Image: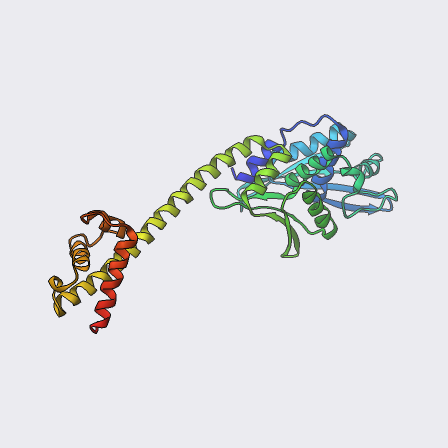
Length: 310
């Protein structure tokens, strides 16, 4: 089961008390996942199509609880994708137009409304329900192991901008793009997705996601530290090799015994501990030297080697 399907299954188990919230959720579900059929003057039919059985059951439940509309459910088998497709069809009937008006799909003039009618999401609880229904109808979430990415797809421009405003209302950092004739609302950062899941009520999925985030962050931190240590080690080794070249050159040109005592000591310590860093070199001297003192002597050796023609 995909990560998106897990979230949708959990969201369909959220039980709403108020009819206004149920209408908001159903309105979004039908807007994102529904197709409207104009059968004649003032006559409409509607159907939804989903691969998630829980979403189909939620659609049927809300239709029955709120409006007692006649409907039928057809299960179609996709042999290419080896998945079932659940179609909920609501035929034209006397009470359908009034139901669509209450859902904000038809306005008061019984004309199809492309966006979100403000009265549907006036209260915060209803706005949350609308986001939940939008997720059920047109949302998807990538596997967080691979990366953080949530998106909603719709071919309705006005609905896309209204949904974006709804995300902003709850301070969710969503963005809008246009892709393959569809408007895509997306969130690509982990904290934003966590906040979204908390708002719509996917609490179990949220806890699982947080566990994955902790493991992923720890793994990234370990990799960062290892890479940092590796880079520092490479830097130390390269610097030590250059110092050994300078020391070998001076030994051949003038002999280490003819160097000043301070330079002679540090040169022999470098030959003795070729992989040591400056702090370790300083600790090996008698008396111990600070890191800056060792660095100063190394610079003098380099300068002397350059002066002699290296």
